[in-house]
Length: 290
Image (cartoon, rainbow, N blue to C red):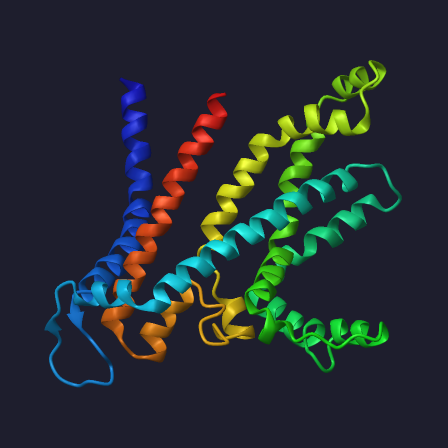
């Protein structure tokens, strides 16, 4: 009886927070769904008429939509490949005893705490600038022609910037998992004659599998909404070369003032993100069961 009363009291105490959270999420979502069925353009005064599914049809048949889907997929997979492989290598490096190990770890993790807008500005002006950037200076020092990253390889540039931001996160998670590896198991394998590569492939990688899966899940959810880096560096261009789904919705809503079409695009983006999240959660569930 006392347990039942304590559970009821706990539910009563957390109910305001739950209601606030639901209101914070459901009200904007409901408004977005409602706007997606209206002819709602800020440049066209007058009453908002019901449009049915025409906004969805227009958004899904727009050639830029398929380009944005492809760019989003390439962006997510590219960043995941760099951060996963680089995270494993950095975790192995930082796990080795060295002088100033704590300072080195802080320096490696520091980029994760830099705001996306700031990091994009730094990469745009200090590194990738074809005239005054560090990459241009290195190219000229080697007798090569400076390469304009943001114009000639815009999507790769975005991948590089975002991967630089998320690499510390992957490194931190994988380093934590690596430190829980049984040292006696590694020593026994070494005494049995296993090479460093064999120990890495057959002991270290299987031990890091779950952590790698968690890194992929968390990063994928956030990478689907990359926006600030694109806005600051390329504005989705040249053309739609670096436009992802999030930036396409922004352009439809705030650049073309089409609130109805942008809302339809937002709903489509939410549905696709949830499909990806459900797929990854099932993949993680099967991995944890094994």
